[in-house]
Length: 278
Ligand code: C2E
Ligand code: CA
Ligand code: CA
Ligand code: CA
Image 1 (cartoon, rainbow, N blue to C red):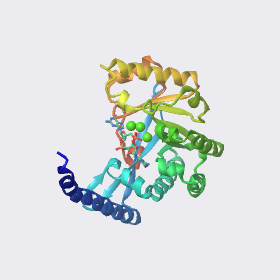
Image 2: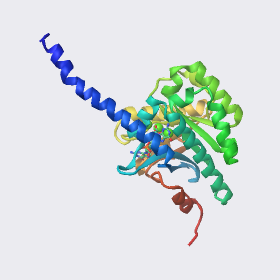
Image 3: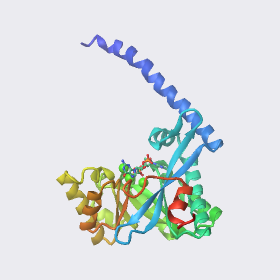
Image 4: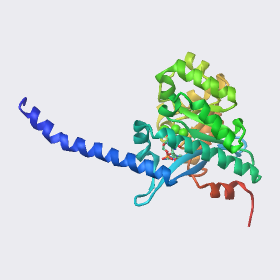
């Protein structure tokens, strides 16, 4: 089978080129998209499980592509991350999320935190703190109404650097939550040193909560871990009554998911929270 080596190379080479070319095209389109304001943010409410109040929204990016329609982040965030374009795109997200939250406050909506996802590349930018300060200044939003969601795996790549960055953010008054918690193997001793306010139980543990005993064990363990470390715990991807009941029984603090609302436009957030207008 050795003689197949060369043929294999010739077979795979064109495919490799196509993928590289696609990535290059996507990169150009992302650059143009940013310049032409093709990105938009949807907001998904986060609900307190005891009071039923919406206390925060997570900003989730969408790309209104001129020919491909609404593009989900899974289709372009990885390339944006690889090419570094996530830095200017992430800046736009930060500014827009802060601006929108301040606009809601000025319009008299109940005060909420806006949660912004920060990718690994963005988090490692030397000037992340300066960029966050810029977004707060430009919008006039108080730091405590901004929360950054960083994934557990991002933190674990370099714990010392991550903790230093998180401390600097905390000193600004910005809150931090750990996204996709449960998927990244942080040690308990490390977790204790993270200056974070919340753990987000990854939705992969919530999906099959009704039937999967392992997922039940992980979810309830994360909830009691949060209680012991004095961190709030939110479950993401909550869709069913049954999942809500499980989370309540296990004293989870908060939830986010289609059960309450899908990610919706800023206008729809106003309709949802602005009280009866019609
Ligand atoms: P994530 O931060 O884990 O966000 C949660 C994802 O789950 C979102 O997908 C959300 O729409 C979806 N979701 C929420 N509730 C439910 C539910 O009940 N059921 C199901 N099946 N899904 C639910 P989305 O909006 O497609 O975002 C995917 C990922 O893209 C995010 O995962 C995040 O990692 C990334 N992302 C989104 N916006 C941004 C951004 O502005 N910057 C960066 N760096 N990443 C972003
Ligand atoms: Ca998130
Ligand atoms: Ca998540
Ligand atoms: Ca996830």
